[in-house]
Length: 176
Image 1 (cartoon, one colour):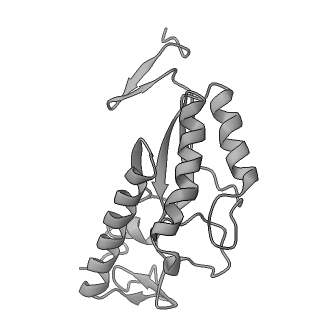
Image 2 (cartoon, rainbow, N blue to C red):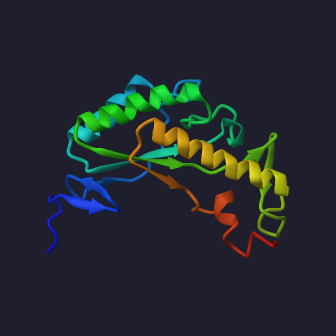
């Protein structure tokens, strides 16, 4: 039987054990979409509690993509967001844990709900232009670069749960 408490190499990341905290929405951000003190304390507590790998809640690569303008997702879309997230990663590392950032999905562009293409499954959205798709890709690239600067051990992209990014993978939503 596998020893859950034994160190483990996960894709080149040395974990102290096999315990993973999956991405969970905490709703603990400032209005600027930065970590609150409560969020910093939560992640510190998890790392001190011997969680080997912590996966962040869905962090928006661009705050303009949010479904709700008053949303509480962390954002990593500008240089100002790096310092707060660096504080978060430093606290996890100082307490022996590893941390992966989950880059969340987009929902809106220019205030409109968007989709890979229009189908019976997403009639309330408008089809993304090729230019917008290129902007989305660039947003993920920039967010991944910021994530590495902020000290995250890896980047996970959320392309699940029927969110628009996952719709690109499904012929039920993507007619292109």
